[in-house]
Length: 119
Image (cartoon, rainbow, N blue to C red; front, side, top):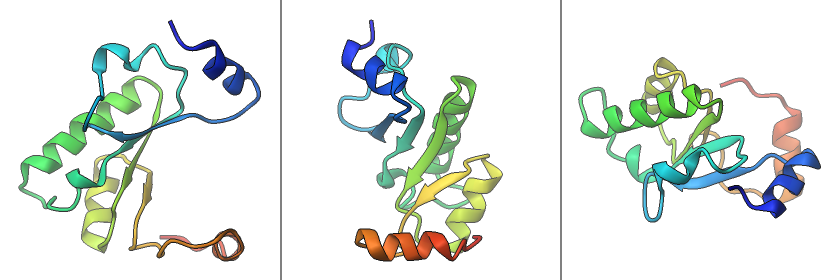
């Protein structure tokens, strides 16, 4: 049963995300009980990801799971064009990492978003 507080946030139009999915206390048995929008995959899976790595297969499975459950899959730690290209092939349309930008304060982040940069 999802938390009443989480359901109230969802009703307010606030998008909910599970961060660092795939490590720690992630539980597939609980995944469908939360009213989440985004399943953010931990950066540890992408740091050594390449076209033939086991981490690529794990990312593909988590991205497919997220898509099948109606969540937006997102991955953190994208640092290269090659990683981004692999994620696009896996149908992961959301990512974050130094490839896009270093961490920014709210004013700088607003300016970056306003430029509407297309990666």
